Image 1 (cartoon, rainbow, N blue to C red):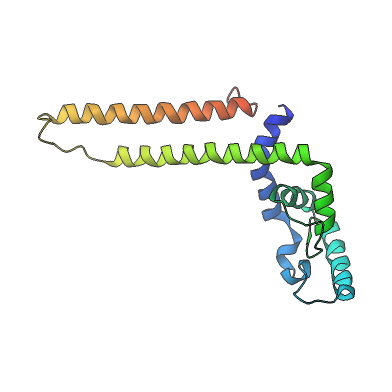
Image 2 (cartoon, rainbow, N blue to C red):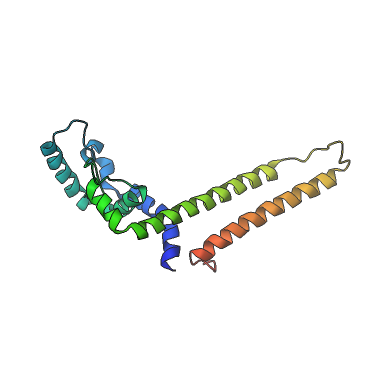
Length: 177
């Protein structure tokens, strides 16, 4: 699998890792965000505690990568901790890795568009397969209506198959296991 193929499949894997193993789900969410009007000294102590908390988390690396992809953090405002980094650290890291993060975001967006198309086609297929063809004034025979419906179903199946095959080929699944 190439690095490009891995990037295309990476976002769902990262999100699943965070959802399954993030320690912050059991912590107070306010720990990771600066409150409005919070004095800098208080925030520095709170931020240090949040960073320590993150460094013990098994999902820290996945959380950091998602933060980079989501554009979290700002170089001018220090108001959050995610993936064990402050907002300004995330902004600086994203700037240093701009090309890599840009490619990852583009792959995420391409994958999302394709996934939406696949989902839409699957819904259309289920709807068409559950529909009972009815006679209309232009079609006197039920068998002709059934043949048209079968053709629409075959077309939807072919489109779904084409998208799935392309996705599998890009991600190294040329042959089913």
